[in-house]
Length: 328
Image (cartoon, rainbow, N blue to C red; front, side, top):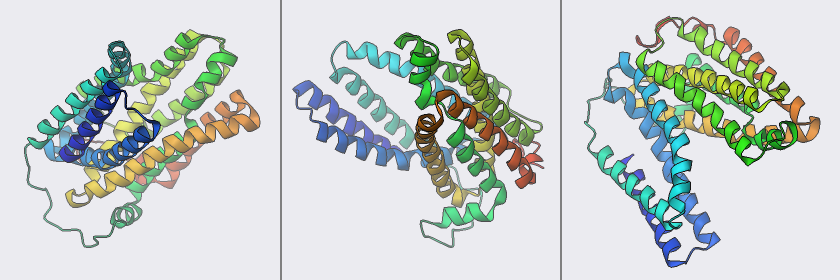
């Protein structure tokens, strides 16, 4: 994690220098961002896998909620701060980001090293060992695949500009409100769950959250008021973060130390894939059926996926507590 953050700091410093010197070229940006994305691909699983080794297992859900809280706050504050800093020149926000990443790299390298909870070694050293492990563990397979299909069909981010212009007849400010609403809902719930983690009926609450998410997306399709649409998206963001935190906790707690990084890498792949393919799916279905039918279809399918997964993976439905390693 520290090495990846150091690489990202160097790349951002390079962008800052090129911006200041007026040497920026589109080809340079593409190359830098490709390397940056590669570093992120290694950093994200490492970050997720570290959490259970930094806190005791009963505290993992609260730690993940706190992590989500800071991430959501960054998603809200970051773009606004970047816009303000850009007023002083394009090199300024790049420079600030480079300094922040460098500081993160130094702090990450100083994290306490905790001995692994398991002394077993990974027998299969291939890059597919994480996939094999997930396939053999139906509970983890159910958690990760639920995220893949629910987000794949239920996401509406790509359609928000069309809703803002053609359905709600609002301006770019209104679009910004729509984009901000899910993050606010997720931020509020993250604050609550960081203080009061889910202790009972975690499995049912996870499925219930996905059902609420899909229902909110369906309701959003029929709204004609900007404020009502923003409120519905707040509910969707709040429900989504409940599902995300339960799923993340189940994966982190239910995976042994020696496999956690590999499983986190596969989980990250599923999450990123579902986000990107979900936007593509939204665009395709909108071009076929129209914006509103496409959104309704996505929301309904998300609900159907949650209901189906409840019976395909009954062990997940029966999970009671996250603080005791997914106790059933």
